[in-house]
Image 1 (cartoon, rainbow, N blue to C red):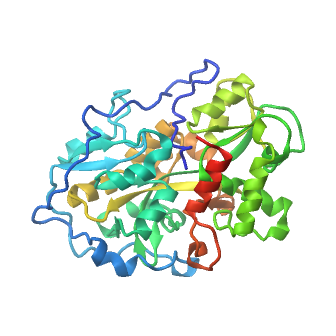
Image 2: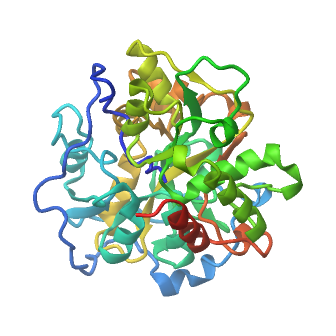
Image 3: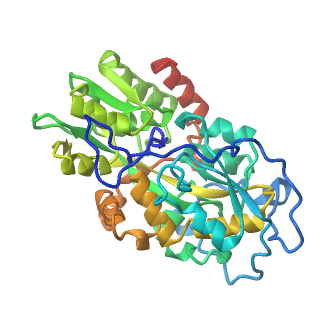
Length: 420
């Protein structure tokens, strides 16, 4: 979205404050961004259905709590010999190989343990993941919600045999059953990193709430992403209940109009960020008085001696990024090994510490990652239930109704609001 939240909170470059153990993601190895021509999997490879084989399974509506999928039954096959390499498409910082810091490397151990060389690809900027996923070849992708929804709908993702992934069961059910990870009774995503949003202020004014960022005079900062419209829609649930907003990511034309109008009211006083370090810089420099950002930044600023406070909120928006398998991966065996590796506590612990986003595997919440998990209130199930996790907006309202606006509508309205 995130990005938007793709920006890494691993670097605190605000007001010349740098915390120990914090750094930003560096570029990938030279020569890792060129497209790779698919090859036919070798004998012994895991059978992965292509678009035609999986067509029956991808048309079902996202599940209701009563029909959410469970992990696959006992495996009927095992992962075959590795093909020697796997192509990974992910935001920067989601698959670190030690290029920036030798101690930040969960790609290297995977290569040594599996014999699968990782070809890393990154989108050139946070907002270009969807476009890059359309034009390049990959075996696995770390997909944000707006991309995951399209991949499933267009049958560009293969159902995942979760019984081949020993670490899958370590992920809490509420994450495994997110609408961006499942469709009908099929699993399409292995949750990786997730988070929610908070409104932070460096001021002392009292009586604020999460809707204040849209109505209060003063400089405000929001994510530069179409799904930020959901934050305004969520505020309207309180300020204009007659609109009938139920899910902030499933909006009728009238509800979308109202949310965009709310965002436009104080357009001249609002700035938009793409990298998550930008809200930190804005708050510490005084350039903005309030910002919508991720909770871990409050902890970073507190430890840096720059007090900010979170505005009270009864509910919020959030996201889950999941790893998905291409519909026709060139290296399915190495891809499955990657899916399991990236779900392990060690890999997720490093990823959470590096990005400042919460790990899906709760066993990763040790060491420095414990601070991250605490910031997102990972153990507070009552709070987790109040997070509206992002999905790609669709005209069928997530398969439950008709008359909603879709992601193309949101994108067009957002570009009218925030040109460029």
